[in-house]
Amino acid sequence: MPADALLHIEDLTKVFHIRQGFSSQEFHAVDNASIVIDSGKPEIFAVVGESGSGKTTLAKMVLGMEAPSQGNLRYKDRQVAALSKREMKNWFYHEVQPVFQDPFAAFSPLKQIDRYLYETVYNYKMVGDKKEAPRYINEVLSEVGLTLAEIAGRYPNELSGGQAQRVAIARALLTKPSLIVADEPVSMLDASLRMSVVNMFRKLKEDNAVSVIYITHDLATAFYAGDRIAVMLRGWIVEMGPTEQVLGNPLHPYTQNLKTSIPSIKSDEAWDEKIDLAVIETDEYTRTGCKFAGRCPAVMDICHDNIPPSVEHEGRSVKCFLYDEALPAARN
Image (cartoon, rainbow, N blue to C red; front, side, top):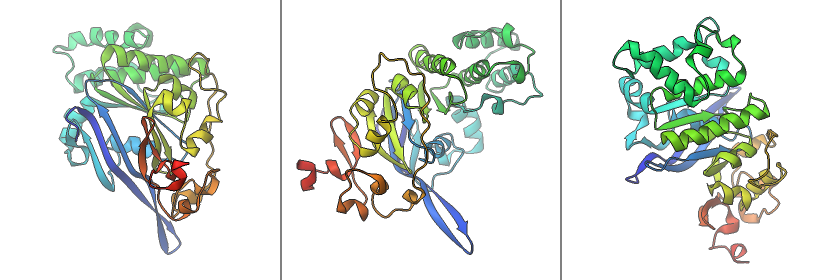
């Protein structure tokens, strides 16, 4: 494991079994994924792909909500799956916090929303005296553009979607985490609110030295926010590297296909549309060779029966035979 790694994911795999009559079929929701996020170098690491690509399963494993079937997932050099319930509660969730897609699902409609903030502060002993809690909560809320006076005594349904998501982010920030795992955090918001939340993540990275795993199917906000990006296809990471390189000049045919879903990859354009990508082929989970072979415009014979290697090419990792220097096609 790299000595300076905040999060080290190596060959991480999650296998699910689906019962079909008297038999069951297995599919790899995440298949040998490897990611390293450095400590001391905060970044927004975007994970994109179609629905069913494994993004949420990856997030759940990072958060300790799903146990990996195989592979290593280490946070600050500690195996997450080996942590006890006490260690998860007292240490891991102090360090790693989630932000989910639906802010209203994270709060009970029968409970005043500021009570969640007070409970987080008390449970994680973030203040020495309970009298300090309002000041501390207000200080954190100010980082997401809110005040305690605005939300005190109010129920979730009395807040807008943008306000509720900001409260959810503030709740995550109360423990002073080093890593936030944000799973589709803007998909339920309108365009203007999406950009304000994405800008908030960028500001938190700069001001609070927080790294963010930003999981989304919205390529626009991924391009705008992400320092690096991983493109997932049926559990595989097919291309990974600096966001501007990967989306600006995609190498993998699947990434190239995703790029055609957005009008242009230019940082000075306003990104207002959510790109909603549909599942095209369900058998891609169980395909013998390359999972993209059935719809790849550059498919070769070798792709049908062989799993492509992940190779380093032009400053990023790409899982494709087109860039395998051992093949004649890669040299042409």
